[in-house]
Image 1 (cartoon, rainbow, N blue to C red):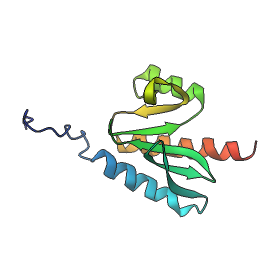
Image 2: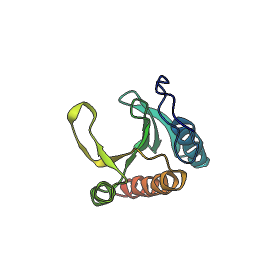
Image 3: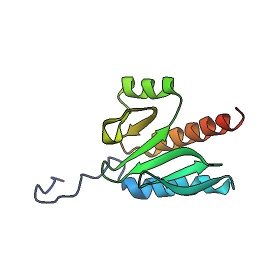
Length: 123
């Protein structure tokens, strides 16, 4: 189906998931853990594990933002799955924006982000 050029809405993802709905659904699944809760970060909705940032949703770019080890962020960027997260021009080296709306990728990265945050609780 051709996209209506007069429609200001971004195109739907290949999987048909609305990015914000997918973020909400996948992060809702994390809330079974009482240490995980919703919050905000720089005005963005986010989830935290015992106060440590795990992930966020960028409403303007309509993408998932995850906190992961620097090496993993670099890998995601080099593989084309992620982009640097740089609000106001400052690059956050442990954060990656994930512009492709892909349920499996987002679920995997959220799991990795929770594990990364959990490791930070023991240091």
